[in-house]
Image 1: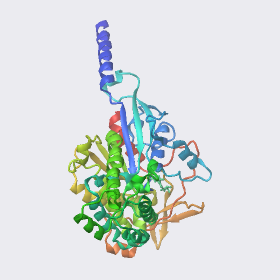
Image 2: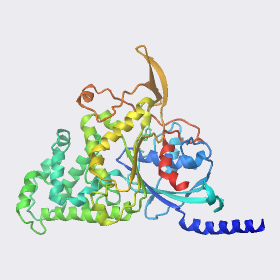
Image 3: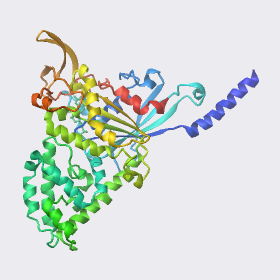
Image 4: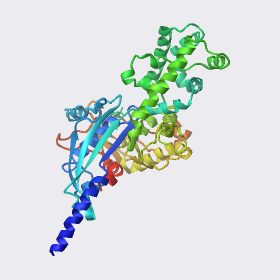
Length: 471
Ligand code: GDP
């Protein structure tokens, strides 16, 4: 007997040493999506669900909780001192206010660190120690920044050509009229006029803001809308040229110090000093990525916006398709091994429509996915509500029993409605003619402060992102 216990002690010791060495104890999770897609709500909810996992959170599909192996989760000090801290407390303050309000959206990159203590679930590893720790860093960054990656493969003239085709769409053309007049009057060969260029660049930025206000998402360059620390810097004082200007320049050599020379140099500076550093300093470190997509707002707006969101997604996806485009592989070896696409705000549709919402998202991603290989990356699509603001109910309408939603509007008035059917694939012209889809903005849910935020499928998201790391 003595002998056996001696052997067990020895095995315990060895396993402990190897266990400590091979244990995977750190995970960098990145969350992105275009403005308004729900990143702030999502990260607030993830942190809240994890902090409340053993108390009031409902997470039946999160294995570490279901198997009662989670010991505790704690917020830790900000790891990267040069990044903004994700404003979790402020977000919770807004959601706990009476009446509750939605947290203010983030506009740049920010980070939050959690320590997750848990017990391993099987075999010998039970002997390693009472608990094991995983450090989870969550980084939030604007999806608009990913729209800039394809710029690295375009020179200034090719990029101008691309923008010119966007500017030709009737909806955008109208929003751009002030910019177009100023740009077309510009003498590209004249001596560089910094103030003149700044003025035209400002009109171009105003045009992008107008597009955003009108619900468009494919807005380039990404930092013009969300400049962060670059606000006002001359590197942002450029803009795309018109077709006749492009043609003229393709034939002439540019004169040093001229307007055109300044525009070329700023574009190149933007590529080298703004776009590349984000990939080299941040993107490179991400292990897993969540991409949030607000399909429902695009459906609400109409066809032009829906098509625009689809084009924006195609651009955005190039950042994850390192198989085919070797752009990132030339800069570094990307690490992301799991990628989850989530249609956000799924509490705006009745439960019976949520599977259609996932199908719709899949069909939006389909073309981009087909053209790209996601080498070594496992992808998943889902529909979630980070913070569920409605409840499902039933009502009779024209003799039929149907699912409806109940919630309150921004003024606190109760709403009961059937928001409409979600198409299971990218809608055809018939759908847009009928335009049967409409939803209001719900106020955040009223709840007891000590209760975890209500959600839809955040436990499945947690399982996909973390399940294998805390087994
Ligand atoms: P961000 O710009 O990507 O950070 O987006 P936010 O997280 O700030 O979300 C923008 C708005 O979408 C919020 O102010 C809410 O009105 C709405 N929203 C976000 N997530 C949810 C959700 O899960 N349910 C509901 N009903 N609305 C949401």
